[in-house]
Each structure stands twice: as structure tokens, then as C-alpha cells.
Length: 98
Image (cartoon, rainbow, N blue to C red; front, top):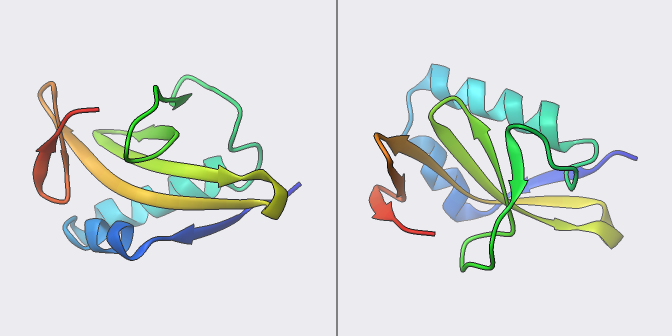
């Protein structure tokens, strides 16, 4: 079963903050990991505690991709893309706490 992947306007803005090579790496990882079985936990993919951002996250190097799944529509919605610096997470250019 293949899932379609859509980006929110905020997630697209987040991607613009990164260098071209970083964006390419992130988008490739999203397509590779989330087009099939996006709701299966792996070493780099996990369900989060309830929060305002998204239900799931995947780790791509120092980047974090936050997403929600609409099972009935076979849709993955990318909500935000952030990066880790040390032990701190930044989304939309600001430090963020989940």
C-alpha cells in the first residue's frame, strides 16, 4: 500500500532554511521511509507523546521530520522539519520543546 506525501506550507518554509544538499537528503529520506508503512516504528522513526506538532517523527542525520498519518486516505502530511544542535531542537528557526 503506497501513501501519498504532502507538505504543509510551514514544512515547506522549514525546508527553505536548509542548504540545497540538506534539503535533497531530507526529501529523499521522506520518500524512502514514509511512502510505505509510515506507521511502523523503526530505529529512526517513532510515535511521539501527544504534542502540538505531530504524532510521528523520523530522524535524518541531525534533522527531524514531524508528520501525521491519515490512514483512510493513505496520506502522510509533513507538518514541520527541524534540526538538532547539541541536545536542542530547532523548528521554524526557534528552539522547540516537545
